[in-house]
Amino acid sequence: MDELEPSTLLAAIERFTRWLEAYGPTSYDHQSYFAGGIGGRAKAFYYRRPAIGTFAVAPMIFSEAFVPAARRLFGPKLRFPIADAHYAMGFARLARLTNQSRHYDTAVAFLEALIRSRCPGYEHYCWGYPFDWVTQTGVMPAGTPLITTTPYVYEAFAAVYEIDRQARWLDIMESIAEHVLHDIKDREISADAATAGYNPQDRQGGVVNASAYRAFLLTDASIRFNRPDYGQTAERNLNFVLRSQQPSGSWFYAMDGKRDFVDHFHTCFVLKALAKIEQLVSSEACTRALDRGLEFYVNGLFDADGLPKPFARAPRLTVYRRELYDCAECMNLGALLRGRLPLLDQRVMTTVNEVLTRWQRPNGSFRSRRLLLGWDNVPMHRWAQSQTFRSLCYLVPLSASSERAVA
Image (cartoon, rainbow, N blue to C red; front, side, top):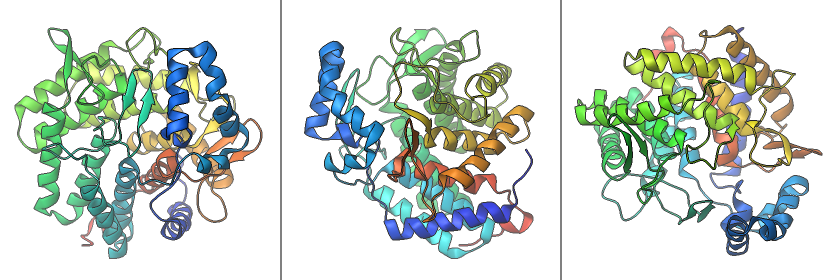
């Protein structure tokens, strides 16, 4: 990857941190249209009766495509644990880059917020969404632990622990691992493979990135806490992910015969998990799958301009051209696999330049989507201000002096 000057990235990051301080930790969301009573009922009806239900969700879809600022009419600003986790990781990285204690203090403040926002009613630490999430498989009530959120919080505590070595962060990480092992259920696929549930109530599983997240977290925890049982469960979930890979090198969103779309950021989630597992344990099968997946990714999920496109195989008509979340996860993947594949490095550099020149606004925030006409400029922490911030922080290389303690 032809490196951008660190000063360029740090200047963009500084503009964003000034905006974030002024804007605050709550925001509207991609799901704001459907998180309230009216929108939630309309979406549930659409899933039950798609033909008729299309008319129920049409006003929200129209607004999302042409008047995105109207989402504030459907629900309040909320605070999202997944965003707090990304901000904590970004500020922890920024603390190491700059040796400035103010960034460490901000990272710790986000961790403290995460401690307060853990899901109630569970023995161990876990996190989900602060709204009722209407999905094809039913409603996940606010406060339901999600395997797609909790691993990011685990990584956030790990990032700060790498700086200050405080035992309390490690204790919370171990509690998270216990939740992921015991509360998230498996469905056996074969003698050595199992699919992980999306939440503690899900016994069917099938969502590929859910198993990938669980496989990574438990692989890390098995080494960190010397727990072979974590590693055994992780291996079964990893085998499910590896065997779900399609001949093209891609992954469907789910192996349920229904949700067979292939999109950008979920593909990144799977690739990131495999890359992190590969860095922790030696697995030829993992490496082969990662290499095949990357070849598909760089050739199948970018457009003629070399920029992320939302879908290689779309589930429906989309009402936007580009997605900030896709750009953020492209950059996160690029930071993790820097130098592994020249075309990936090229794609990442093209995306970084696009984000810094066209997506970052004068106030420091990032546009959320490029619509069919114009832009969605509503800043949404979960979708994907926080992920973009984290990715930019991790694209700045650490120097020898950056390794000094800042706490």
